[in-house]
Length: 295
Image 1: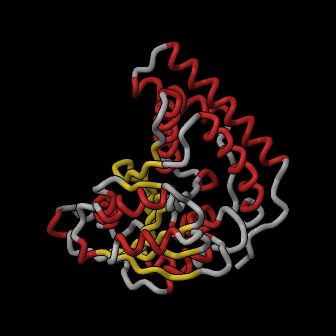
Image 2: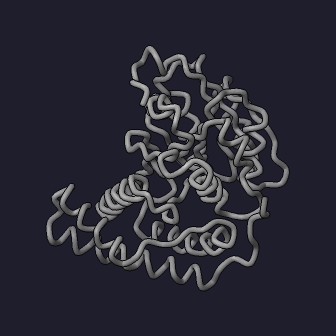
């Protein structure tokens, strides 16, 4: 593993790619967060791909002249990411969404993780704020990611394009993202695991973005429903599975221990997770009819 230091990673050039699709007012916050990165401005380029921003992107680009704007007439977010990759030059590709606000040291965290040349994909922590319930769920999601990505069970590995970085050589070999359906990020991560092994995918909890769209536990449960529908789309393409009840219980126990949650907090988290599992299963039952194109 390569030792990290500002001297070694500060020279790493990064390409940031963000699809913009009807995310007002979060899109303005996303752009401001990217413009406020502590990473040197000359060491990264920012490409915004317009796949249906309802004109907001023109105003955002006016406020942030360093942002390059590309059109994506199809309106598909994965086609937008592929377009951004094709038009970018850096060896490391960084992805987030217009409804997320990266932390100021987001790019530093990516560069630090990618200093290990054996790493092909890095996934960061997605936090939700606004209520105690979301704090509990964020803690659980962080523990779950640490559990999955530190293990060797390839079928549990997943992706989330709102906080992900990919080495270009790996993207060129494994990509592009499947277009026209959800779950393209999961497909890419699973391809990376199949090609390079689980050690090629790393979870970096210091690589943080805040999910601006999820502001209540109800919104999170609705997201779980969507994720369930999405799972039925990508599972015919790549081998994945949900966590077992025993695996969920272990992550739950680890979350409680790490954060010292009270009985009341633990009980609330249990109820929220049970609702999320039910929503996910319902989403799978009512699955989307389309599926990603096979390679």
